[in-house]
Image 1 (cartoon, rainbow, N blue to C red):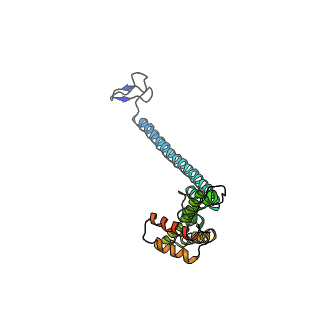
Image 2 (image 1 turned 180 degrees about the vertical axis):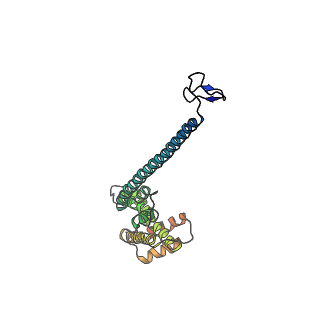
Image 3 (image 1 turned 90 degrees about the vertical axis):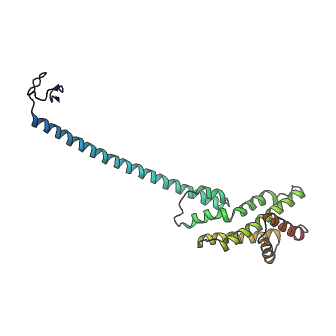
Length: 226
């Protein structure tokens, strides 16, 4: 059976004329018509593929632009937080932003490691050390906490500078915090450079609990007597 080109009904293979509409079966015209339809279909498919490619490229471009804009907004936010000594929040703002060698981003991402104890100390100092209305016991515990945050942070940073594979920018950021730790220790607790170094030596190869005991012992002997 075959299909009449005129009325689309089935007719016998041997029929010369369609019994329904009288249309003569013309093999060449049928083949030409079929070929034309095939060509049209191929062109339609090619156009569709091209349209899909263009639309995909436009969508990818929009997504890339949106990603860049969001990254720049997060970088600006992180820089503001970094300037306020809020190192962990600054890091979270750019955690998934590629550094791509940008010094400001490298410093922000390193600061929350190198400066975590310093950030904690600033909170302790702001809330506790300057509040004269607190009880003596509270102030003593606050001084102990603040002193340990400084000396322990210094210990960690100096250890990491010696043992970690840091690049030049990362090392520079660590050394910035090392100076901050030492300056605050000398200013707030009247401790000399030599005494700081002796405490750091005492911290070598001991547990954190023992470090607390060593720090508190120094405070009892040298600071709380004032």
